[in-house]
Amino acid sequence: MSKFVIVTCAIFAWAFYEMSGGADFEPLERKIPVAKAVVEDVIVEPIIPVAQVADVTVLPEAAAATIGYTIIPAPTPEPEVVIEQATFVAETTSAADTVSVWKVAGDWVNMRDGPSTNYYVLETLPRGTKAEVLAVNADGWAQIRLLESGQVGWMAERLLSEG
Image (cartoon, rainbow, N blue to C red; front, side, top):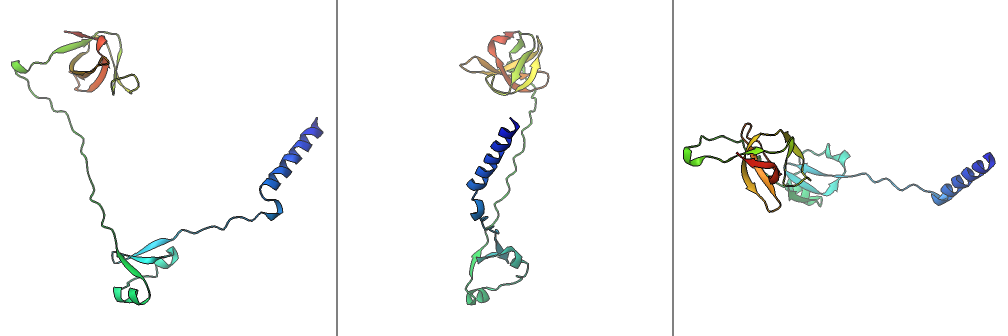
C-alpha cells in the first residue's frame, strides 16, 4: 500500500510540473504602476514614472510645450457633504393632540428595524410596554414609537392591544 501512495504522489508531482510549463516555464514580466505628476495644480502628460516625480519642481507651460508635454488642468476636488443625524425632540401635546396609547400584548416581543422578520431586532419588549402607533402596512406590521424612550421600530400589529 505504501508503494502505491508513493507512486501516486510521484505521478501527481510530475503532472503538476508538466501542466505548469515544465522546463519551458517562464514567469510573466512584472509591470510597475506609474503615476501622473501633478505640478502647480496641473497634470503633466505623458505619464511620468513615480521615481521621477520627486525630481520635478516647476514646469512652466512654455517649457512643457517645447519638450512635447500636454498640460491638463488638475480636477477640482468635490465639496465634502456632511449629513447630520436628526434627533427626536419631544413636543408638549395639548388636549387636542393626544396620542393613542397602545400596549404590547405578548410576552417579550421583538421590535425590529423594518416591517418583516428579515430585519434586525432593535429591542425585545416585555408585556405592557406603552407605544404610539405611527403607521400600519398591508402586511400587518405596525410602526411604533416607544413612549418611554422615543425609539421607533416595527412589530406585528396583532401583538398590540389598545389601552
